[in-house]
Length: 355
Picture 1 (cartoon, one colour):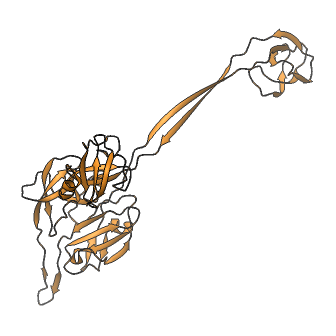
Picture 2 (picture 1 turned 90 degrees about the vertical axis):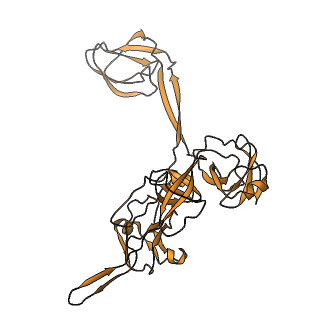
Picture 3 (picture 1 turned 180 degrees about the vertical axis):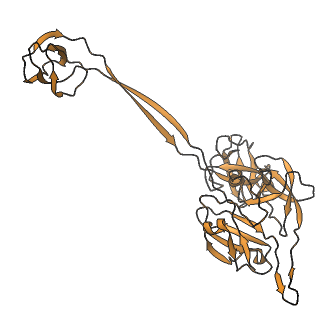
């Protein structure tokens, strides 16, 4: 089959891409190493297996997101030439399925519409055409309450930072995402005051010609060389610092006023690194580990600062890691790796293990 694949949105960390077909459940890529530039420009693949209704475009670089794209006009096109040329086109009709979903970060249930021949895996995170992110809990019945399923993600965290949904009517498209975190900055200001403590004298040139002198000003520690001092003019210098190289002599008038202190202000800005977070899809809390492990429906998404579920010190409600989750010392199961953990009222882990 020949299929034109066009990316309408591609994150900065995406690519290159491998292409898979639903005919073998996305096991073996039929094309590898396709560049982002080629897909954004519109990539014509001639290796798509016959009967393909969905193509999976998966990034293999720093970003490993993927999306399953429905092939519009899937099937075969046959042209037969007789006295009058005729063209016969076979198309595949989409199957509509409804799923019960839960809004990420809450327990609010909704129903989402899905257009396509393949079943959506329970427990995955999806983004609707309304821009919100949901966890799929079970097969449901229509009508939909939150729009149509657009994109699948590995976690609520990835979905919530994905770019807004885009649609196209002329080509097959995919969208990928990058994760963006916000850093915090703190500033400190230091003020240093320096005074010249050496006595200050005023010297005047009372001669009839200009004098050339070298001296240290009273408000400085740096000498001024070859200064031209006009007749009847004077300067204030640090005691004993004046040297006359041409002209003179100079007349000592007396003490100068005490110079004002020199103040230097230095500002320093420190930028702290943004927090790293990892999202976990958890079942509802149970009274013990056995109850939690027996629960099969994903109900909430929590976040932690460690990629390992059992080594997290604290769980949070949001991916900024600012709001600890009140676990009430109940037990929760991580759907992804079948492990349980007990979470205190301040979000701290108190026990954990495998189901």
